[in-house]
View 1 (cartoon, helix red, strand yellow):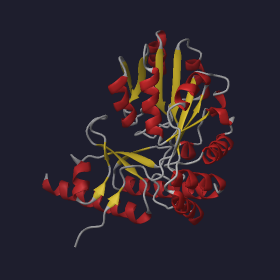
View 2 (view 1 turned 120 degrees about the horizontal axis):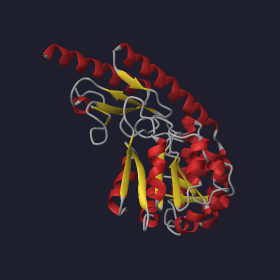
View 3 (view 1 turned 90 degrees about the vertical axis):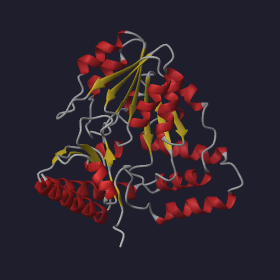
View 4 (view 1 turned 30 degrees about the vertical axis):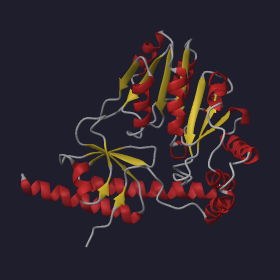
Amino acid sequence: MLKKVARLNLNELPYLPPRKVLHAARDALSDLNRYTGGEEMESLRVLLSDYAEVPKEHIVLAPGSDLLLREVVHSFSGGRKVVMVSPSFFPAVQAARQFATKLISIRLNPPEFKLPFGVLIDELKEPSLVIIDNPNNPTGKTLFDLQMIQTMLRVPETLIVIDEAYYEFSQVTFTGLVQRYPNLAITRTMDKAFGLAGARIGYAIAGEAFRDMLSAFYTFLPRSSVYAAVEALKNPDYVRKNIDRVLQEKERVRKSLDQLGVAVYDSRTNFLLVKAEVPDMAIRLKEANVFVSDLSNQLPPGFIRISIGSKKENDTFIGRYNEISKAYDLSI
C-alpha cells in the first residue's frame, strides 16, 4: 500500500477558499472564450487598493508576484547593480542572475539570520536596485523596521523593492511609504493567506518610479482568476480564520519538533526553517512521500523549509521525520 503524500514544499495554504470564491471562479468559465474585460480588472484594482489602503493608481496587477519581481529586475537593473540578501526567494535570485550585470548578495548568517544593515548601506554608493523579501523566505525572519527602510529610500539613485508575500502572517508592511517615496515598490500575492495559489494573482503597490513601466506589461489576467480574487476580497473574513488556523498548527508543529530535539527557527510566515542533523533529510523525506524544500543551494547542509499544511499532513511529516531520525541513529 502506498504511503500518503504530504506536500509541504511550496508554502501553499492547505485550506480551500469559501464556496462563494469557488463558485465565482466556476461562473467565469461560462465566458471562457472571452478575454477578461477592463471593467473586471478595474474592480480588482479598486478592491486591492482598499485592502492595501493606497490609491488605486499605485496598484499593478500581474499573474504572480514572482513574475513581477522578474520584470522589475529585467526593467530596472540596467545601469544599476542589484543588491539582494542570501538566502532569498529563489525565483527572484534566478532572475537577478539572468538579467543583472552586477549582483551583490548580502549574507544572512545562522543562527540569527540578522541583516547586516551597515553592509547593505555601504553597497548603495552607486546606483542600485535593492530587492529584499520581508519576511525573508526561507528564514521566516523580518529584516527591517521603518527607520531602516526610510534610511535606504533616502539614498540617491536607489530603487527599493520589498516583497511582502507573507504580509498577512507577519502584519509588517511599508505600503504607507509608497506615496511619499517614488523609489519604493511593494510586491504581494493572493497565493498564500487567501488560498488562491492556483489563481496566480500577484500585485505591486508601486511608487512613481516603477508605475508606468510595470503597468505596461499585463493587460489581461485569466477571467476565472480575477473573479475568484474579486469575490475573495469582498469576503476577507475567511483570510483571518485561515491565518489563525495556520499559526496554531505552526506552533503545534514547532513544539513537536522541539520535543524531538530538532532545531527550529522563529518564523513570521506560514512555514518553519529547520536544521536537521540527519544528512540529506529532504531526500529521505521525499523517499517517504513527504515533500519539503531542500535549502542546500542557499544555506549550509541540513537546513530544510517546511510549509504548514493540514493537521493530517503535519502529523505525517512529524511521524516520518521521527522514523527517519531513529533509523539513522541506529545505523551509526
